Image 1 (spheres, rainbow, N blue to C red):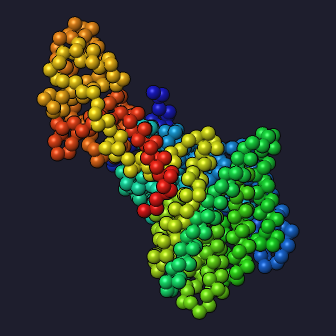
Image 2 (image 1 turned 180 degrees about the horizontal axis):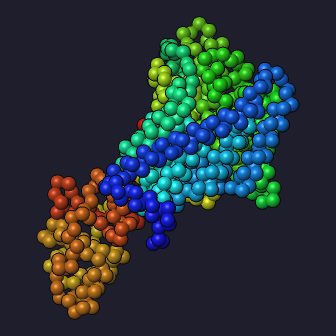
Image 3 (image 1 turned 60 degrees about the horizontal axis):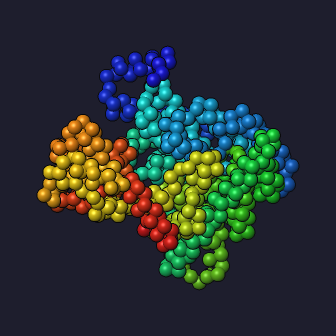
Length: 584
């Protein structure tokens, strides 16, 4: 273990003076992470807004063919590309990088990549790139947490726990939505909404939002009228919205991955300048539709308030789809949070307008209501986080009147997108970088698997009274390396073949097997338990584990090994693939 650096020594001395136990210390680190991440993200937001205002604040977006739009967008793209050339690890949204850091790098995120993400995305998005600031803000918060963890000489486990806490703080500060931030990190980054980190994550997110609101105010992100749900025909159109939203979501993810795969195969000597093509495309599109530049929340607000005509909604949805896919695929630094909300608002608003034209006599919701539900549906489909998307819509609009159609459309969009493209966007991005993250489908299958699905119901067992030499002779005919030991049909313990061999080698082959059995009750499994605990025990060095009845812990039901669980998992995954993805 390396010696602490001088800065770490000073921090550790300060922490010792506080006389905190491990749990309280982690709470202090969570609060500190939330406050510092909140301040960093507020600075990031102010820099992005300042660049956008400086470039476009005096332009009239109603004036067509303003030559300055492609010039400013491309110029900003060149500067952002130069930052990425110096700090290439700052490309992308930051969500996949954060997941990789937690799962594969023990929570390590370099300060260089955090600063690069801060600068490259602020300059790129501020100058017009059609991407979102939420992914970079999540990365910045995670980077702050990783730095704090290193300064306090935290263990690898604590680092892995602190990084998602910082990620939630960064996302909460940029989005002004602590519940959404916590749920997204638990649902997407960690993949476990029941994690023990829930309390610390909430503390950090709330702290970050308090910092943000102290500087930027606490107004909701969007202002919407009081929507009301129409009749049954209205709900049916929301179902259609969910289906089409799922198809668009899957297409959006595939477009990004397809384009990025081609970019990664390009010659290294030109790769530095490929990101500029995304800015150039946005600038050229802005000659006719400048609304696609940057984050675009102003135009989302107009769609929510039904202030856009049909053909504009359609064109903005198409052009935002293309511009975001190109910006991301060409290697720029930014996220898909904001674009997914933008796409959903335009697509949903357009579908609502078409519904009013086709069914003028029906009692339908306003087109703005369809835009609101479309935001949730596209967010759920693209990011594969249906629970987060429902709460997010409530937080960013503070409107709770459309919960039924929102839930219906979100779940349908998620299910359709997952059926059309099993691999989520962030998993696909990590795979292209050579890192295999656990897929959502595999996690879903594994969570459903029980010991009863994997156990060997009729294993070879040894009698407690037989000698070690006799048992070893019988065991040599089996392929297993450990065996259950029974006494008069009742489970006694487990014994390894190597233990029996050692007993014989030491001249103790006449001793009964019961003398060598491991009777640790902590190794007992039950048929109805998920296989998570079984895998953890097996990974700790146990070759085989006993599965006993809950009614009688001495009644052996079977034994289970890692190979048994993997075989059961393969069968279950194949069955799920044949049946389709459940959205229950």
